[in-house]
Length: 87
Length: 323
Image 1 (tube, helix red, strand yellow):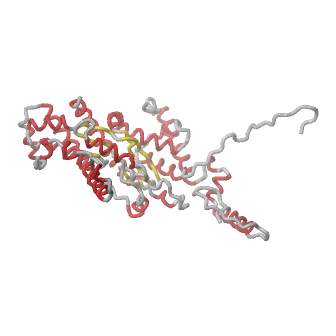
Image 2 (image 1 turned 45 degrees about the vertical axis):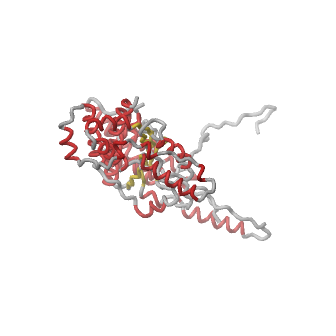
């Protein structure tokens, strides 16, 4: 089924409203592009974007794996997009 | 814990009950912005997709295909259009963002379309001995520029390949291979060359059979549409991602008669076509931030859709002749 489209049809007021909507949409898209949109403010999304956070968890994971008395284990490499520790 | 002898049900107000993580929303939003600025997407649909840039792009692609004859081409072709940032669907090199500088619109068949050619070729042969080969050449040539057509030439190659395999097999002599040569109509087996476009046009002016004339004119139109764009180069890096893929799955199987040897070859060969991931039929690269690149990619996509629509019209007529 073709999707229904909402377009400005009649009257100056409607057109002005549509222009305002367009600006709002473009602003929202720019926020998404810059990673500043509210949907991107989750802990996981912030983690994904923060190299320092990733590095800190890597250091922690290495420290844990290097502790004395630790059993010999091998990590599997995690698929892309998954959370570290990637050791 | 509450006082008394009662249990309290904890309240979950304000706590998210659904948690989703979608990688690449920034890249998708970048493309969505470009689509709007290039006039290729209607910003008004943003509210309908509830701010999901992936759904917004999908909607823009659907609308674009619809405007280029989507309904007609879906009658004869069973294709899936996709937008990917990596041509290797099983890539595991941890590169999340590097390839998002370039994206690809890809076209892949869910299953192959089907056309029976011989009744059309017979009709044309009655008009002029060079029209069947001219029609066949125009029809398959125009389509093969964009999508893979499985016809008698692919079947002959398959038989040759099977012969080589069986030659090294002690029991191979007992195997009966499909008689593709025998299935080729006489009008194509003769050593005629296809007519050049100008010669074909001159000949058509003298053809009294209206149906034959319309068929050849439609094939010439198909050929002209398919020449309106060139297959874009996808670059060395993208080529490397396709190194381990199978050949593209055919978008159309062109047989001479129902259940003939060509169809038999296809039925046999298609069993192994998905053993490895097949290469997409069409790969159109685009740079999401570059409106010129996106517009050019959509222009080429438009040509592909127009080719498929025109081919679908021809297939419909040919299948009516075959009934």
